[in-house]
Amino acid sequence: MTLRDLAIKWYRKAFGAPAGTDIREEGLDTVMDGESAVAFCESAMESVVAEVAEGPRGIIASMTGLALAGRRASAFLSGPDLAAAQDLLLSAAGKHAPFVLHATARSGTAHGTATGSGHDTIHLCADSGCFMLFATSVQQAVDFTFIARRVAEGTLVPGIVVIDAEQTATAPQDVRLPSPAQLDLFIGA
Image 1 (cartoon, rainbow, N blue to C red):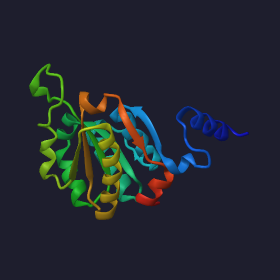
Image 2 (cartoon, helix red, strand yellow):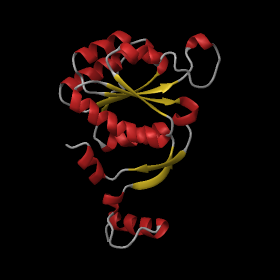
Image 3 (cartoon, rainbow, N blue to C red):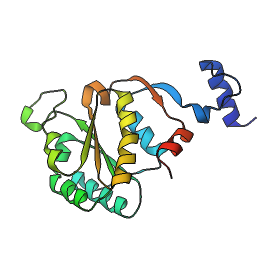
């Protein structure tokens, strides 16, 4: 019995999946925070996550280059990071770079020591040429990640998926992650 078979047997025993069904076709119900769930989704789509660059400007420049070279590119930035790189977002949209950017809405520095979500820096992106989706739950963040990928690749327009800091990004919630087979049908190769 392989390790995969043991995992499937344990999964069916723990969660009551009907015998004869294939987990690879069903998806997975679990509990995750928003950032972890979105990172899992990006890895399932085999996206290259731009993270080894010099600050937010370098990350957006890397994503643009990767997307224009035909790779699935994504990155995770905060609202203030987006504010620092508005010109590069505008340039990426003009070049039709189909990447997906995940932005966590945090209070800007003008708010001092305020905690919570601030959308002021996120709304600076409104005229950047990127489309934006605002997720209010972890499930929406997962769903919007896949929708944003499909729309970005179909229209050659960069997308931004926004999640709030405490309410979604770091809060564990119930979520259903799609199966690889479902992803292949929706996203494609």
